[in-house]
Length: 194
Image 1: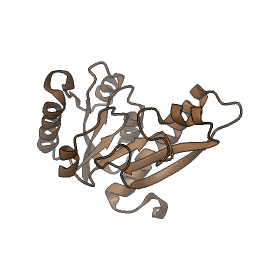
Image 2 (image 1 turned 180 degrees about the vertical axis):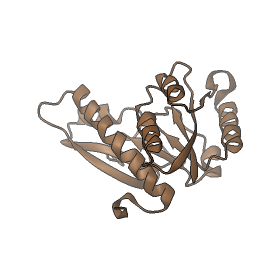
Image 3 (image 1 turned 90 degrees about the vertical axis):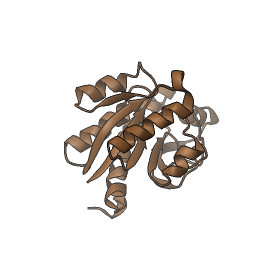
Image 4 (image 1 turned 120 degrees about the vertical axis):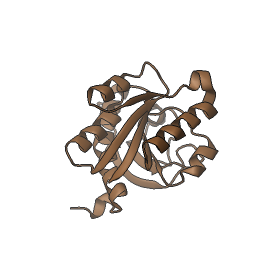
């Protein structure tokens, strides 16, 4: 069975959706731990309440290099095969990514390659697009530039506000991410699974 870790920086809503899929047997994998660069991340408390170990990556004291060494050690000790980024707001170093090429996954709130970066939803909103969405992709050394695994479109409605659009994009993320991971971990794309 595939083992993985989830990295978060904030609320942890995507992490919680993935963890629920594991608990319900819909995602046949072992979530070994949840880690964050933010000691105040609400998602750490959610992970603990769901029964998953929660770890702190000390970017503030150790810097990126030290935090990534800590993460690598956690992954090694827990036999983690995949790293899943779920609202993790740090860029991983090219060296860290290269050592785990094809084994780090991210979700981004736009239809990549459009609107990469920290504010995909806001950027799409300000540009005035009529359709935006969600992308799950493998992580490479660039910013939101790795191979695309899955996408889901979210139309921008005439009555939308930025806040209502954001809520609908997050709902789309919560279903798409764990289903994409299930296919990735099993070696069968979600589009081919019954």
